Structure formats: structure tokens, C-alpha cells
Image (cartoon, rainbow, N blue to C red; front, side, top):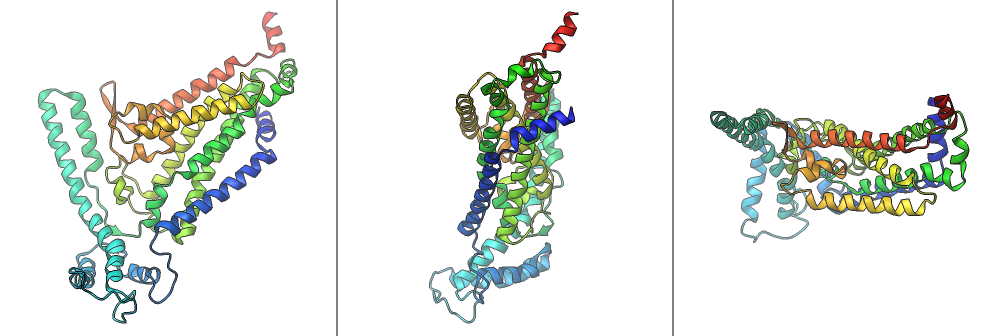
Amino acid sequence: MIRLIRYEFIKQFRKRSILALFVVFSLASLFKIYGEYRSYSYLTDGNGERSWHMHHWQLYEEYRGEITPEKIERLLAVYQPLVEATSDMTASTATDDPDTMTGNLYSDRNLLDRYFVQPMQYFYEYSGRSEQVANRARQNAALYGERGAVYQQRKSGAIYNLYAGRTIPAFSYREMCNYYLNYDFSIVLTLLLCLYGIIGTFVSEKETQMDMLLLVSPGGGRKTALAKILAATLFLLLISLWFSLLDLIGFAASFQTFEGLALPVFAIPNFAESSVNISIFQYVLLSAALKCAGTWVIGMLWLLVSMFWKNALLPFVMGLSLCMALTVSGAARAYSNFVWPKVLNPYSLLTNRVLLGKTEFVNLGGFPILTWQAAICFALIAGLVLAAAIYFLSAENYHRCVRRAK
């Protein structure tokens, strides 16, 4: 069986066109990531004496690590005079002031504000805000317990367990991680490449009528169909994992650092209400797994659609239309309060910050289940049902039918 899977994988997915698209899409993603860095980062001004880039990393060595009162006081001692000097907007706008870091008072203030004051304030105050949420959830749990509202009590208890004790004890550069966690372009490339590869799995043999010959071959029929399903699964997982890895490498190379990966994921502002208490690096791994699950389910749907056609064009168009429908539906419901459309749409697993960035639950049998946990469970069930449908709808091998008749 392993040899058959290997044969099917090589036959279907080691084509020149797929390899060429793989290279082109990978390069396109890297160029897009570098464009994000050049467009949005303020540290792209080189290493000159007045550059933000140079002074940022010099200051960073001083303030990185554990957040202490001494560091905060030291930072404010530099920042407050700049605020006072520029508050009335009458300070000099010269760009060659020798008494400043970057050549301008306003520029100095903006550098400190964007990369040090605001992040450190957010980190320092986050534990207090999360403790307020935890205390409120604990009070709600006690109140719901008195009223006999079991589900609400369990939900409040789950929120308390998520938020109690949350803290960001260390200061670290987070810009690279922020843009990485909000990057979606590679999802489009992943889906297009997977669709192009998957769509010919059954069609190519029907176009040459090899499918009829396989039915009388000892290894043909459903055994071949199972090998195709497993080979397609391997292809989908490899493509999804590759682009997840490439995104991380691309952002780290563009921003020239891996700093920030050890921070808790809620250190990124739009993950303040995250439903997971893990580091950003752990989030990267979890996100890659969720993307694999979402890609696999959509791939199995494409495979089921394609097995009924003898020409690749129509199933490709149908697969693309299904993909667009899932994408539009997922984008429309991404930030709504209706959680079931997000849970049931496998596209949500691809843009998984929609699920992981906010603490939301679904009610399953009276128990609160986090939306990302429910989504991956439903996705795996749906994928297995689709794979089983492909297997049982495939024509059975002639020799097996004869043996069964006897």
C-alpha cells in the first residue's frame, strides 16, 4: 500500500507545472512579505547615525527583558522631556539637531512612543486588565451557580481559568510578530496551488480511460482510490506546512530578527482577548496545525467534486467557486457574534486568528467549548466523511467483485 501511495503521489504531484507554480508562489509570498516590511515598518531607514533602525536596537538592548520599575523610570526620564518640548508644537522641525538621536525632537518622541512607551505600557497594564476580567468571571460564576444556570456557570468558570494569572513580565520587540500573525496572502496561494494539484487526481485517468483498465487490475478500484486519497492528503499537508514555515522565515528575514516569539500571544494588541494561553511560537505551531486541518477538509471537498468528471476544466471552476463561497462567507462572518458559521466553515481554520484571537464558546451538550476546538473537531469529522464518500463512491475492483460472487 505504501508503494502505491508513493506511486500516486509522484504521478499526480511531481509534475513540472505544479513544481513551477510551487516555486513562483513561494517567491511571490516572500516578495509580498518584504513589501509588508518596507511599507509598514519604521525601521527601514538603514543604519545611519540618525536612523530609527540603529537607535531602536541600541535602546532595545537597554530596555529588553524583565519589566522593572527602574527601567520604566529610566525610559520616562528620557521620554517626558521630549513630550514637554513638543506638546505645544513650537519645537524646531530641523532634521539635524545635534542634541537629538534622530536629528529631530518630534522624531525622537515618535520613536520612543511607538517602539518602547506604548508597548511597555500595554505589557505592564495587561495583567491588571486580565485580572479584572477573571474576577468578573468568578463573580458571574458564583451568581449563575446560585440561579442554577449551569451552562453560564461553566462558561464563566472557563473564562476565569483562561484569564486568571495572565501577565507579560518581559519587554520584547513585537513588530515582526504582529505583522506575521496578521498576514493572510499565503492562504490564497496555498488554496490555488492545492486546487490545481488536487483537481487532476481522478480526472487525469478518466481523460485517458485508464480508470476502466484499473478496474480489472488487482490493485485497482477502491484500493487505488484509497491511495489517491492518502497521497492527496500528504500533498495538502505538505503545501500547507511549507507556506506556514515560509511565512515565518520570510518575516524573520525581512525584519532581521526572531525577537518576540517567546512573548505570550496576548502581547499582540488584537490578541488581547485570545482564547489560548501560549507563547507566540507555540501559537505559530498551533496555527500551522489548524491551517493543515482546514486545507485538508477543503481539499477533500475538491476531490469529491472532481471524481465525477472526465475533464479538468469544469471541476476546477467548481472547486474555485466553492473556495470563493467559503472565503466570502468566512470573511463576512469573521467578526460577527454568530459563532456557528465560523465553527462550521473550514476557511476559519485558515484565517485562524478569527477563532484564536477572541474568547468565544459554543454550547455542546451543556458544556462550553472554545470555537477553535469545536471548529477543528467538526473539520476532522467533515474531512473523514468526505474521504469515506470518495472511497465508497469509487468503483469496486473487478477481481474483488468476482471473489465476493463466488
